[in-house]
Length: 325
Image 1: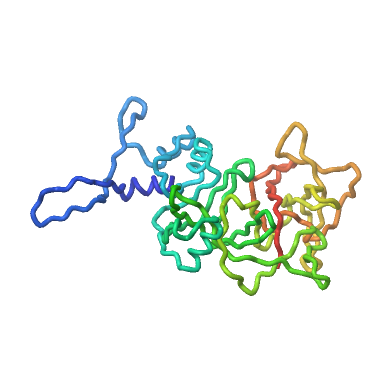
Image 2: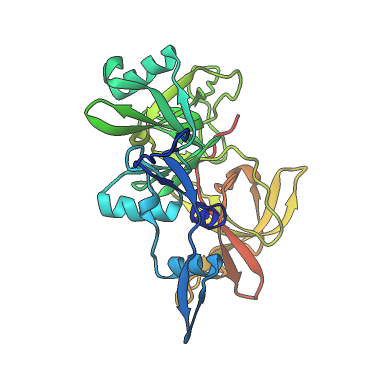
C-alpha cells in the first residue's frame, strides 16, 4: 500500500512498446505517468484523497495484487501477500520492491544450486533481493521474517537472516531462498548442547561469524529473537512453568535488576471477557518471585494492547524461543 500511495505522488511507470517515428529521437520504453483519481463524495464528484482511498481499500479488504511481480514472487505489502497466498496457495512471498537485483558469485551460485538440489546450469546467475519474507504456513495469520531475525529448520539449525532472494530456475518461474549465517549451539563440558537452566532453551554462539548459507523458505520452522528483553512495572508477561508447555500469565509488580528477579502476581483470563485478566487466587501466594530468565517472552515483540481489570493498560507478550549467546 505504501508503494501505491507513493505512486500517486511520484507517478506510475508505464511500458510503451510502440516506437514513435520522430527524427533524431529515441523513445524510452518506460515512462512515468500521473493518474488523477476521481470518485463520488455524497452528491458531488471530487478528487479522492490518497489516504482516504487507501483506508477504504483496507476496510473493504481490497488490495492491489496487480502490483505483484508474478515472475519473482515479490509483493509490496503483507496484506497483498495474504490475499495472494490464499488465492494461489503460495507458501511464501517476498516483501518489498523488485529493484534490488545483484549478480551471484560463483561460490554462492553453487551453494544455491546445492540448497535447491539442482544443477548450477539450471539456475540464473542473477537474483532479486529483499529484506523481508512472508510465510503463510507458520502461525495463524502467517509469519513475517526480516533481516537479522533468527530462523530454525527441521534439524534445529539456527541462522541469522541477512536477506531473501528470488532466483530464476529453468522450467520454473522462481525459487525463494534466505541467506544468512549459521549460529552453532553452545556445548557444555560433556559435549552436550548447553541450555538455559530456567527456561530450557538452548544457547548459541554469536561469535565468531560463520560462513554464509542458503535455505529454502519452506524449511523455516519458526522465528526467534535475539534482542534483550526489557520489562517494566505493570507489564503482563508469559512465565515458563515447571514442565514444557506449562506457561503462566504474570503481572509485574517490581523489578530487581541487581538480583535478576521479578515480583509478580499470577493472572488468569476472565471467562466471559477475553483480553481482560484477574488475579489468580487458587493455590498461589499473594506475591511470587521469579527469575528474569524464566520469562518466555524475552526478546519478543508486543502483539497487542490488553486491558487490565482495574483499568491499567498492559501488553501481552508473545511466547517465543529465545536463543542466548
